[in-house]
Length: 193
Ligand SMILES: [Ca+2]
Ligand SMILES: [Ca+2]
Ligand SMILES: [Ca+2]
Image (cartoon, rainbow, N blue to C red; front, top):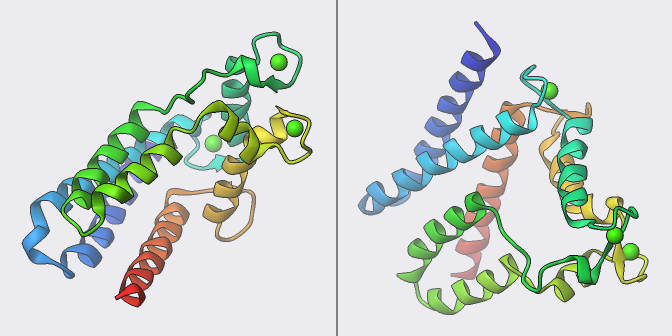
């Protein structure tokens, strides 16, 4: 089995597991939820394949950092190793993928009580102003971002996904951590009432 076949096989399994968990909850919503799950599966797979630059079926810490460093250098126009406030656009860009994900979830939330309000709050957090973006990540308060500061969210995400802590992330580990997050979210929703 090639690595690609393995990855495809695993992501079908991820989909099946997520489907089982979600559709069992609310069969009436099945089509739109199924769409969400399919889209999510494709998104996870596409991101994984992109990050896995040597195509060996695992994303290493280095591969994740390379991606962050590339994005960092796109912003660091004067190439001095720091992103200054005026090197950023007034509103931080979001990827097509993030936008599609937000719109999908927004449609789902819009039918819920307070969904519209919540969507607006999430939209503002998703696409923050450059001031908010720097303020959130600027740990040493020098009003600019080092690569470490810029990459911190990606590093934290990587650590969360690296379930066995060996410095590499597999699709199975992403599956495990996403399921864990789903369970936590469902539990939080139940506790809210
Ligand atoms: Ca790799
Ligand atoms: Ca700079
Ligand atoms: Ca800083």
